[in-house]
Structures are given as C-alpha cells and as structure tokens.
Length: 406
Image: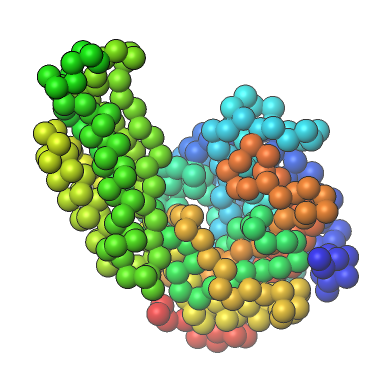
C-alpha cells in the first residue's frame, strides 16, 4: 500500500488535512437523511462563508453552492465540482469516538468525506483565486441516497449563473485501497430502476390448499423465474442485475395468503438491456401468476440513469491522478452496479466521476458501503483534494475552448 506521506501533495492540502478530518468527523457524528440535511447545510454554509466564497443556500431544499471567481474570467466560463451530503437509515456499529449520535442514521457511504474534501478544496481555491481562470462552482447536494437531489438542483439553476460547461466529482471507494484511483470512460455506475409486484390469489385455510390460490407460492415461483432473465435473455457480453429485495405476505401460520407484495431493482449500463429487463420482468411475473391461477401487477419506477463519463474528461482526470498516485495505481476499468444521481450532472455537461480508494486492511477499514461497519482511511481525503485542485489549475490549459459533449 502506498504511503500517503510520500505522495506529491501540496503543503496547502497537508495543512488543511486536520481541518478536513475534524469536519468529516463532525458530520459523521451528526448524519442527516436526504432533504433533511439542515445542520449539514449550515456547517457547509458557515465554512464556505468563513473562507470568503460567495454562497447560495436552499437549492433543492437543503443544497448549498459556493462560488470562486478566478482573477481571469476567461470569457465567463465555469466548471462545477459536486459532493453529496446525506446519510443512510442505518444503525452504526463502529466503536469509534466519532460514531453517529443519531439513532438509526449513519454516514455509511462516505458522503461526510466527500463534503469535507470539497469544502477544503473550495477554500484553498479561494486563497489561490489570483492564479485561477474562469469560475468554479462547488455544489453540495442533498439526498443522493434518495429521493435524489441532483435533478432538482439542476432544475433550480445550479448549472447557470455562471453557465457550467463541465463537472467533476469523486466517490470514496472501499473496494480499492487508499492510494489508488479508479477512472473509467463511459458507463462507470449503473442505471437503477425499482419494481413492485402485487400478486393476488385466493385466501383460504392452511389445511385446505385445494380451495385457495396461494400468493406465497405464486410469488416464490415468480422470484425464481425472474432470476433466469439475466442468464437466458441478456447477451453474455452485457451486464445486468435483477434483485428482489422484499417479499411480504401472509398473516398467520394456518392461513393461505391471498396477496403478496414484492419490491426489487434492476441495474444496467445499456439502455436497450434496461428496456429488455423491464419487459421481461413484467411478462414473466404476469404469465407465471396466470399459469398458477393468480394475477400479478407490475410497476416500474426509474431511480437514476447510468453514470456516463466523458472519454476526454476521463483521460484528463486519469493523467492528473497518475501525477499524484503514480500511473500503476490508476485503475481504468473500475465500475460499479451501484447507482448515482451524479448521472444527471453528467447528462447535462461533459465530465468525470471517479473512484478514490479509501480502504486500509492494516487498520481494519474494510467495511462495505451501506454496512453498519463502514469507515474509511481519512488519508484518502488528501489525495482527493489534491486531484481536485490540479483539475482546477490545468482545466483551461487542457480545454482552451469549451468541450463538446460526446
């Protein structure tokens, strides 16, 4: 594992590391769910204003935006960095002094770290504004875990005034060790869709199954049948997931359930595969139910589209990351079937969302995302801030004219 102390990280970032850790741990102690991040937004606002930035608040309820105007306006061009702020409905089990103080709520995906990284990046950029060109927007977004804050922030003008031409973001990533960076051109995170299934059979006495239509049995057959869709309908060179996450039915041991309710998700990178899965889940569930004498209603809800990185922007970020951690520690094919509403920013303008290695097995920091034991190596935050600052310093040299979305 790389020693972060040996990496070419500027003194300004190292000087800010203690503040980053303090901020991150404060946010970790006080996690808030999506669209309820009032305290978090207050901390972000106070920190940005104390650093001298222009600040807008109340975007998409709790979103905050900071702005740094470079000494050279460079034709009014602007670039956006994004961090998410919300926690998860999860009870923390980490035996650390900064563990969540909010019962049943936890930062279990690194959003506290994302926020701390971007706050100190923004303040360092403000101090260096005399050397910057263009304008730099720092978006602190609510509700990435749901119901989704990126889309309403965009609808409420976060990409306007100044007009943003590109965007960047990062995700702390515990499947990669600290000192590594994952950058993938094209689809880096999957599209997510939710489905609900309502099975209607015929209730009856548990001792007389011939007089009933068992919704539990029908639902179980549906769960089994839709698991064959990926293996038998999807091209083996494509990637897809179908998962049933909940199954609720019945009221007592001796009652045959009349109704069953299930919820699940499909994950895809390719829009044609997504359409195929939606069609086949509905067909399979309906026909299995019909064959067993029941009925099944299926409803799909789009959660987030796939997160697509612009190829040119991805190369740009990979080159900068290689300067910081070394080329052999930049992984060009890292991707995830998880979903992200950073996808909406990347649909609007070209950009890159990259993975920042954050696990440390020597220190036991290997908990999975969305688990009650998730925690990360805070040294990764220095690497994230350094990469962000180098993007700012190099962007307008690399793109003397606005990039065209691929």
